[in-house]
Image 1 (cartoon, helix red, strand yellow):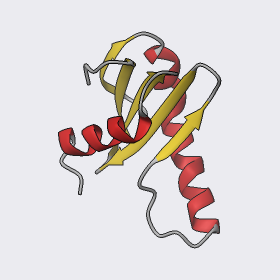
Image 2: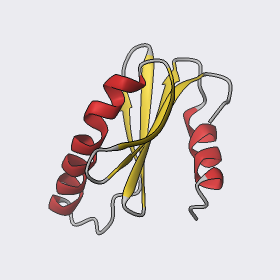
Image 3: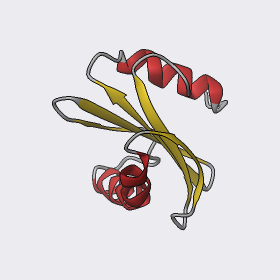
Image 4: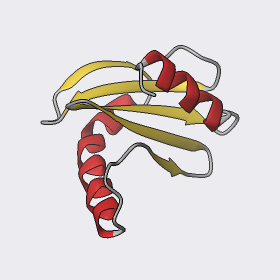
Amino acid sequence: MQAPNVIGYVRCSEAGDVIEQEGNEVDVLANVIVYFQQIAVLIGESFGLEHFHEAQIQGKSLTVVCIPLNNEVVGVILNSRARVNEIVTQMRVILNIS
């Protein structure tokens, strides 16, 4: 995920083991991404949503996009200039998700 406005990314297993990471701030993301995915699934289930496909955490200067992939989860940290929808589309192509 080397694209403009991408600060870093991390790929973790369901158990929270870091498989791959690159960039800034990814250590923090790696520590919370699996827990965030579990909470997102619980929230989705409470709304009657079958599958968790994507979550975005938006702050003032950063946005984090989390996408589950088989038994893994991928998180990307974006700066405030990023076009989130375009990055998500690129992520889906790279990860081969329809």
